[in-house]
Each structure stands twice: as C-alpha cells, then as structure tokens.
Amino acid sequence: MGTLVLALALLATAVLAEAAEWQTVRPGVSGQNDVRTQFGAPTRIASQKVEGYDSPQWVYEGAQAPRGMVRVVVDFGMLTPQGYRVDVVRLMTLEPRPGIFTRKTVTEGWGEPDASDVEGDKKVLRYRSGLFVYFDKEGWVAERMYFTPPQPTKP
Image (cartoon, rainbow, N blue to C red; front, side, top):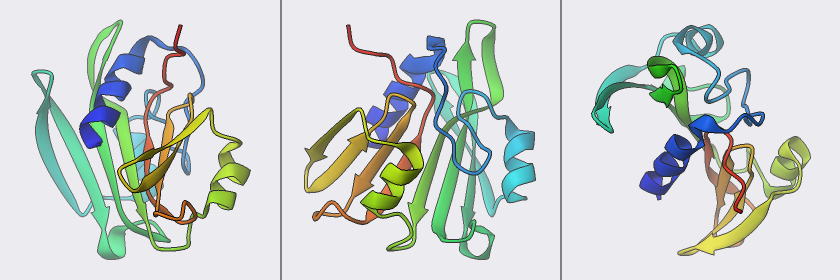
C-alpha cells in the first residue's frame, strides 16, 4: 500500500494541478522550513533511498504529533524538471486518532472523491489532488491519510 502511494507521488511530479494540503503543508510545493514552521522539530529524523536519492523522513509522534494525530510522517525529496530537490515534501502520512476524521469530515473538507474503492478490508477515497484516505471496514473512520502531489488524470 505505501509503495503504491510512493509510486503515484513520484509519477505526479509533472502535473501542474493544485495539491491537496493539510494545515499549510502541500506536497510538491512545501519545503522543510514550511514543515518546521507548521509542526516544529520532529520527534526523529531518518533517511531512506528513493530511486537512488537520499531522502529525509521526519516523524512526529507522541507529544510532538500535531493535535488529534497519533503520528505524522513527512517524506522529502522529489525529482522535478529542475532536478532533484531534497527539501520538497513528497509525501505526508497522517495517522489520526479514532474519530478525528470521519467520512463526512473528509468530504466536507476536501469535497467528493474522484474515486472510491476497497483495498483488502479498507475502504479508500481517492482524490486527483493527491489525497488518499483509508477507512476502517465500515468506511466511516479514517485510519490513515496520504497527501501526495496531484495525480495524473487517466487518458
């Protein structure tokens, strides 16, 4: 599931549509300074290789997680037409506390999805703006939200 979202995020680098955002962080646009301004210093910083590039990952959890969240993970590093930019947000993953984001809250905040389906036992809302929301089996409580750059429209 995470690999699919990462692959979609990397494919979307050439799309010029407006990205979905949470707080003031917008994948493909926001940088490390924007994230630090919004959330403060991360709980921990890791580094991973993505398509051969060193890509930082900031994790906010425990007392440092934003209000209502169990954990927020921000992955940086995007290949752009101008080259690789290590400081640009590629993917932001939210793990909200139960009940913080319901299906109604999501559709009121980001509108009706462009697609919805089921992956395993999870109901998923997909937005071309780059938001993917995975709900519980009943499709009511958001368990994980992925913010990526805008997704390409299928031909």
